[in-house]
Length: 401
Image (cartoon, rainbow, N blue to C red; front, top):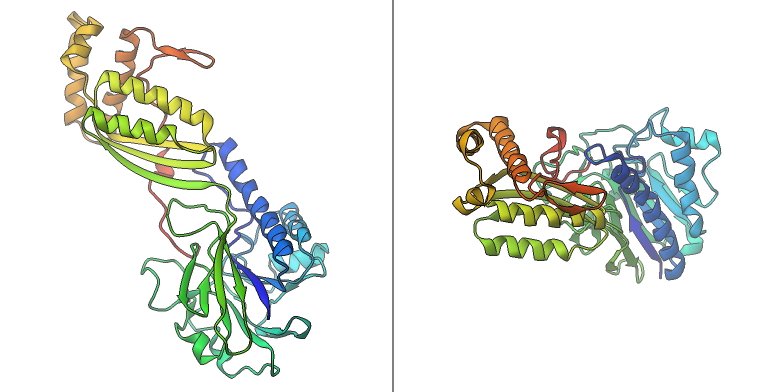
């Protein structure tokens, strides 16, 4: 009875330009660590092979060092690693794969299936029908030939492909490489291991997307997993179980603050974040000066504890109460400036409103008690945690690329 681990979309060499350099480097490194965990898991589970359904590399132009590091990461499992190219690392005439071969970086137990065909592993009881991408985009179904492909009697038929199953994925995914939804049935496959969709998705009892093993998007889609597959025998339905292997938890929170209890709940959630959290926090509503100081203290602590925190607060208005203003003793010219900033925050468009809000926060902080003690010195407590730049201010959408 063959047993496999099925994985895909490693995206080795991926860059994280929206993050601070320190966080970007750690998140990129986590992708290698995920492969090492897969290797260790494969050894513990005594699998017959690891199936890698494309997009091993994020781009054709990754460095030689990146190529060598990737294949070195496979060393924890000495059984067969069966890999095909996807749309990011298509098997072009000159590709990351041909470069890896020239470098001598590919170990003997890594089987690169760079052309369509059947590869039999009779000693393990299965044959792989591979549909690698030989160009980035195709408009024909590269798995169509599976239907008529012959395999030796008694071997489990395992399909390995990278693309978009038609009719079941979101309309906005960015891979045009089509795969028929009933391919497993039509081709008499015991299992069809797919890549391109970055979350775990079971299309039917024999057709599965494993998702990427290390999350890299703010979407709750079951990423961070590999799939353990047990095939009882030719023609029998496989047992499919997703297993967690990811390290970091990517979270996207949209929080609206209207009353004091909203802030209480947010602070409680922030205090409960684990160290492996990668949080994208969007704030809206209104907050008074005391609340802003409390929020900033909390965010400062969280920034030092979790992996990454990005805050978008253009929708959050600072609304000092009359009590706040009285406590600041802001009268005369300063009082007029504060009044103008409060008015501009509410009436000005876009960036002008953001500027007014930040100026109001800074001025209020300077007029206050000098800020709270923070690591490395003092700072006005109402000064906002910097927001993410406009380059990647939006959330990612799911897609194959």
